[in-house]
Image (cartoon, rainbow, N blue to C red; front, top):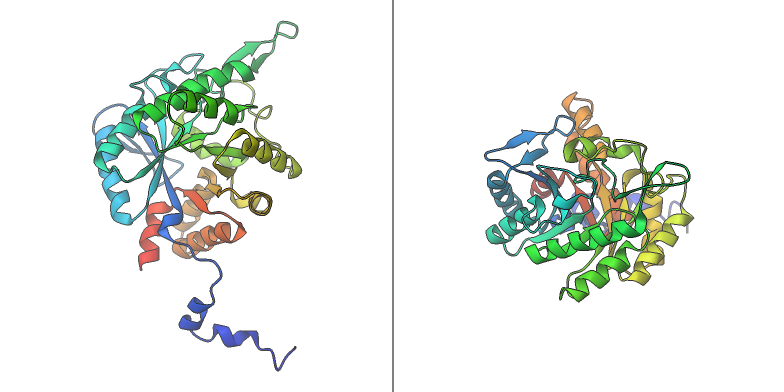
Length: 330
């Protein structure tokens, strides 16, 4: 049927009607809130390129957790900024490393909060790469050693689970990382700890502010040999399929905003929960425009997060989480 019998505006006439037929619902339960923890006392230092996001010492982390709980957010993602770095990122898997301490602190303060531990080496290595370095004998070039890195990532994941992490989220993009971590967790008695795999992680320009926040900028080269080419879509399905076969429990797309088509492809092809990472530059661009008075921050953020949910995200990692949770209550 066509106009005038069909009038699409009939179901838009009032807020009540629009609420009744709304297809996509954004709720506080969709959010995972990233937090950066560091050593020291009484530290709450704003990250210059990410207004409203802070480096927090463990005592300040407790106050942040109180705010998270009060907001109704169910989950946080922890990143650590270590005191020392070395070639193999040993502070990533120390039993008393900064992330491990933070996990225990959060679980003592809010046992019900779901703690996701980022499992990578980049912020813990002195070279800033996501694995250990191999010097090619024939070319002399420095390369990331995939298989040797897996051993260190397994140690990191197990140490995080031992500290009390509810979810392990490996973000390194080494081949075989899900299988290695699944085996390592199972052997250590953590069969019930799920893996939220950074399955589709692009070599993106949208990570700039995060690298400042995590102090993880590569000291040489780039990460294009292990993170994905932004031009590739079919490759994303191959990466995700490998993780499904290897035992991933959730699949992530990072970044989210420029890759909503990839998010939808994963949703359509696999039956696991799909996570979108609303990354640092996506956050910072909105904040910068809002601080200049160019946009309505609340409206832009909620529309963007709803778009990610509509594209297929079951969960959204976002630095906007505390603000968005408050706005959804209004």
